[in-house]
Length: 284
Image (cartoon, rainbow, N blue to C red; front, side):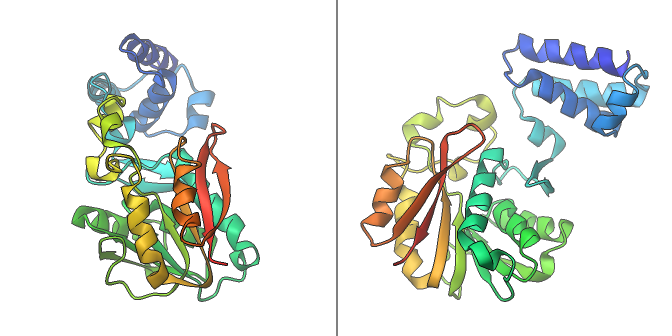
């Protein structure tokens, strides 16, 4: 079987079991199994698959048809054009969450480039993707990522090393930052924001394979935002900003929590699907 034949076959198989991202998944798995880049596929689409590649690809397909996400199969995923290793206890980074990074950089304005000594706090760091991406953009900044899951702390540290920012990043076990020494100029978070009643209706890729702790926002999806609101006065430096991810249906409910506590709200900032996905907070 050639590369292009395998690509078509995998796409057909995945569509047959109702996978919406069938062709994308087929391409990613073929590239990874073959150890090639997309340009290699374009240059040599009719190259025959070796026996080892075919065997590896068969294993990948057997997992994907049971709705194991591609990121879980590969054990890594790209975010902000950087590679992140994953563990079962960390959320798969979504392209939508890049909106938080973009919103933070926009909010910092001139400090984005004059950022020597700027301190960042990432609440619920998971794989570390938000903090590490921001440190990659701001070479003079340093940051702390906190999480209550030990496995997440370990993989975030690994990802900081993998992406060359370990000398400016530290990771600590803490519940919404309690016990961490502030203040911070920038606080970011992608907190759990899905209402408990909704989680069991989600696609199996999320419902089964993402950690429930990283999804569950309580009965109304807002519990984590209230907890963060309680901790902000302790951590936010004068003139500091906060960038938070929100659910696409929370463009009113989340800002209301912070507006009631005296914060100025910027946004919402839209994700790649033009849905509300992030807000920025400032203390007047």
